[in-house]
Amino acid sequence: MNNSTKMQTEQLTQVYVQAFLHLYYDTLKTINTDVLKKAHLYFNSRKNLYFLLESPLLDQVYKLKNLQQVRLALELPESFDNLINLLMQHKRTSLLQNLFAILAQEVKKRNNQISFVVSFVGQLTTEEKDSIQLFLEQATEKFVVCEYKQDPNLIAGIRLQSDQFLWEDSIKGRLDRIRCSLKR
Image 1 (tube, helix red, strand yellow):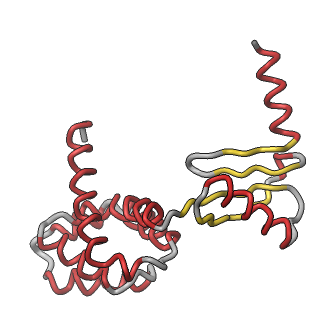
Image 2 (cartoon, rainbow, N blue to C red):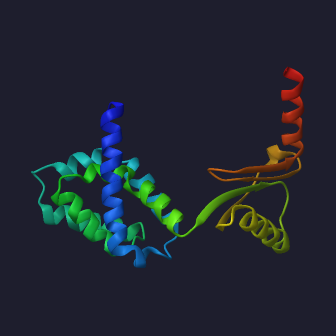
């Protein structure tokens, strides 16, 4: 797929996302965006699915029934049946591949939400997690969702990372900065 086609596909997907959100945003306000990410991974890793969905040999009702079972397994709200049905009618089920990623970004943006991966060594107490949450919310002025991961490579300290921000205070980070300054 060339860049022009890719950009057109992304714009078309964005149109479907905006239309869907216009109709169903109230039902998605509280959705966990991890569910949307899981749906994105599911549809992105099954490229052969689109061949079957576009095939005129399979009955439309059969396709919809199976996609509804996928929706239930992915724990997506019932409103997604309408979106999937519309994409099938328009013969654009291949948009499902990126639709959920764009939808997750848009829901986060509308909810003024940002996700951080908090990497650390050892254990974090509830008070430390609350303190990190408060720091990130004050620094970003957004509602923060944290995913906590132990990372023995840090040696000591903590790393707070999102798609836009990175805060790190660890021995590994300090050593990396020293190594960079010595290379200059």
